[in-house]
Length: 269
Image (cartoon, rainbow, N blue to C red; front, side, top):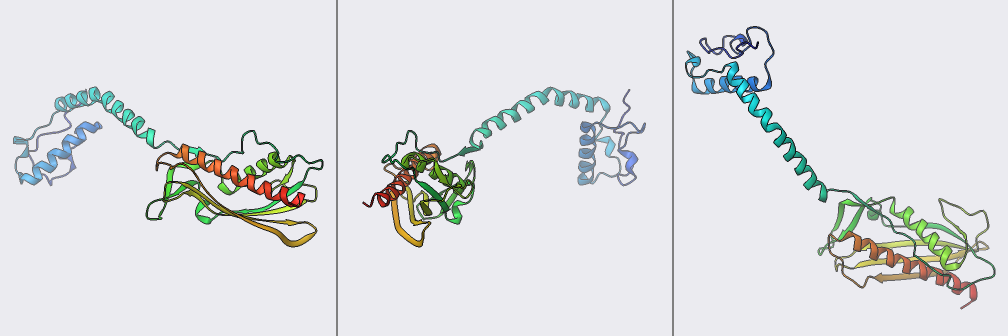
């Protein structure tokens, strides 16, 4: 049986801890400890150091009643916490995106001898190296989406997608990258520099890039090209599905232009 863990305050409050302790040495539950603390603070603030027990008494029965109330309310408290977590989790869920190759791409022109292409480098600005998707606001300030992120390093994703697109558009399986080099000597070496690739302040996706072609037999650059691509539709600030869809479409167009430049040089056009 629990003994009275809150004796009457019939001695000065500065006497010792035994005034508010449990005489039998039995441990107090959290409710009793809170009650004792309230008694101590209330008595001290009221200046009643002579006979505080005449006004404030806390028995095990009181503690037990409060304890029962707490236990009855506990399921409701837990349920509210779970509901709050579920509601808050909707907007805080992490979503990851990738730029995929063009679906059902066909070769620009069939060739009896498939070309060998080496993507030596694909450069993106440092501000795009973050996993959080970057956009620009009306004041040309960069904003990063905390919960909308790239599924991998964007530069590596774009390099792999470029290789897949060139394979399909040039009708070859021999496209090497820094991560997957080809064993054959390349007919063309390719350097790509992406200068801007995000939702711009006009709410449209902008892709600014330039690329250069060179050959194994010549150290000089054969050709240099550039592209400034802009999406047709405006993208809402929170519509990341549409944003990534437009980015994928523009990047597919850039890959097509790169493939056309290679094919045009090959045919002498």
